[in-house]
Image (cartoon, rainbow, N blue to C red; front, top):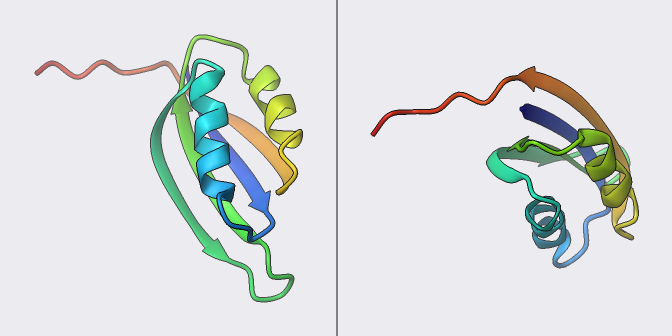
Length: 85
């Protein structure tokens, strides 16, 4: 299953590495990432698409434990699509 995580992060050194590492350690494969700083509050707005067979809610709860993660929302994007090489 493929999911989009909408994250709000505090801008700190290593924040992106921790988010991507957490997704991988929980059995999700990152597929795309995009983001931008929010000038109003100084936080980073990040969208991370991941793919995995595990429940996405467990990933959301783990992400919230990261000290630089302010909030996480998850949206299901559908089943994983295999690409033939």
